[in-house]
Amino acid sequence: MTDVADEASPGGLELSARTYRHLDRASKLLGVGLVALGLQTGGDTVAGVALGAVGAVLALTTVFVRRAE
Image (tube, rainbow, N blue to C red; front, side, top):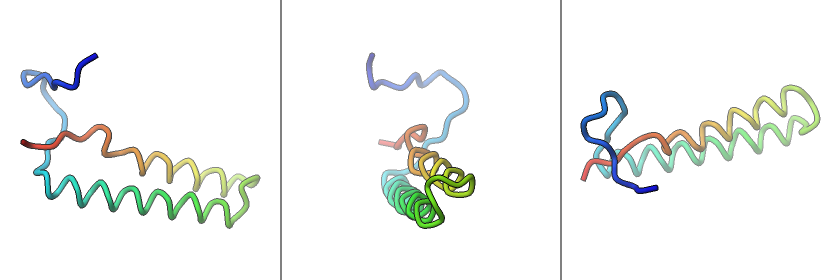
């Protein structure tokens, strides 16, 4: 497995390095905040599990975004 992106493939999102960094930090902070809110709500409740799941997904969103070099 390599880290080389296929330039010919359509789709995807590519951001400048600065924009990517800001988006990455914001998504991680919001994700951690939602997980903490889910735990505060109650980790064994439906609302708590939903908030935790949404927080985890939000924290991982930048995995699918490429940085422009």
